[in-house]
Every structure is written in structure tokens, then in C-alpha cells.
Image (cartoon, rainbow, N blue to C red; front, side, top):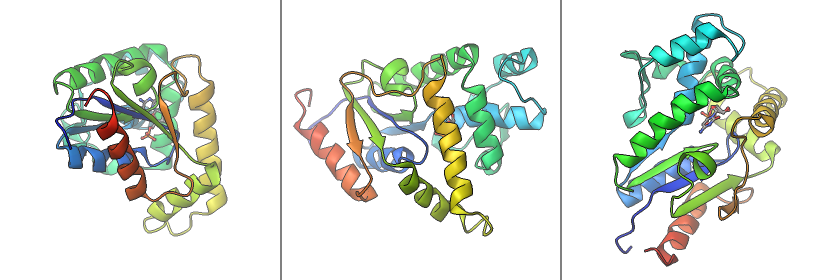
Amino acid sequence: MPNIIGPLALDGPVASGKSSVGRTLAKQLGWVFADTGLMYRAIGYLMVHHDIESSDSKYLLELTHKATIDIRHEKVMLNGENITAHIRSPKVANSASIAAESSEIRELMVEEQRKIAADTNGKIVMVGRDITSIVIPEAPFRFFLDASSSVRAKRRLTEQIETNPNLSISEVKKAIDNRDKRDMERDASPLTLSKGTRLINTEHLSLNSVVDEIMRLIGNSKTS
Ligand code: C5P
């Protein structure tokens, strides 16, 4: 692979494979991997912890302003505490997507994410919902992964069934549909396929085929 300089921005709905694909791409390229969903999950954790239900809460904004969130090495450190083990629950995920509706909260997250990207001199794979459209729209490599919500629900169920054997496919699909709807219909930076971003339908593709396809596309690109 020639000497490629990114960043590579990757967006997509819940369980579209962006984190697994992004992590693998970063490994192959020797770049940093940043999963920005972890930052919103840290805020979701704060909401659950402080019993806050609305993203309009002044207290939540105050807590977010004061919070230090570090997502390096895929560990989530919130105000110095390692909360990695607590952020994968459906409750935290749901609260994260409620927090993500707030434009004030998003501004704080985006500022931090741009700093993370700038510190890597382009050697970063950053994944989320607004990376291609808002955080680093100037990134030379921009991809949007998608698949039907039934396929995504099956993938999510496979990941979660071990820790939660009572989980049903319909429950998982409902949670995915709710979160997608909120992410796509919010006023502040909704999840959308922006101009110049390449759509990849992962419906019938394995993780490795998606990674190979993206590696092929960036290897063939004019900027390489
Ligand atoms: O990607 P993940 O499912 O961990 O993200 C949790 C939630 O954080 C999403 O449902 C979305 O509402 C929000 N999010 C966002 N913008 C990002 C990353 C995540 O709004 N860049």
C-alpha cells in the first residue's frame, strides 16, 4: 500500500459494522482508531448515573462542560474513572442518543474530536454519525456503511446474547429502530449520507470483505 494520508471518516447507523471495520482498517494502516460513539456513551452514562432523562437539562450541560472524556485505546475514561465496563448497556446507548440531540453537547464533542484528529496528522480512522458531514468533512476518505435493520439486529443480537441470554431479536430491532430514528431525524447534525461520501451496503458482506473493499478504494484513490 503506498504512503497514504487520511483521515478516513466512517459513518453509519447502529450496528452497521463501522466500529469493527474502522478498528481493523486502523490496524492494517497503522493509524489511530477513534470511536466517537464512546464519547456520547460517556454522556449517556452520566445521564443514567444522575437520573437525567432530557438532553435539555441544564445540569447535564453543566456536567458535560466539566467532564473530561478520554477514549484513547478504546478505553473510556470519564473524569479519571474507567467506565468502559458500563457503557455497552441498552440503557446507556439509548441515553447517549438522547444526549446526542443537544446541539450544545454536540459542539463540545465535535471540538474534542477535531483535536483528536488534528493530533494524528491524518493518520486516523474516526467513526460515528457526523464524521463525514461535520467533524472532518475535508477528510480525503469518507465512507458510509449501511444494511437493513433486520440484518443489523441479527449482528447485534449475536454480540449481546452471551451476556444477555434472554434478549430477543424483536427487542434488539426495536431499540435499533428507535435509536436510528432519533439519529436521523434530530435537528442537530442528523445522520445523513453527505455529498462525496461513498455508500457501502454491508448487507451481504463479511467484515473482511468490507475492509478489503475500503482498502482497495483508498489504495486506488488519486490522493494516495
Ligand atoms: O456508535 P454508538 O452506537 O456507540 O453511538 C451511541 C450514540 O451516540 C448514537 O446512537 C448516536 O446518537 C450518538 N453519536 C452521535 N454522533 C457520533 C457518534 C455517536 O450522535 N459521532
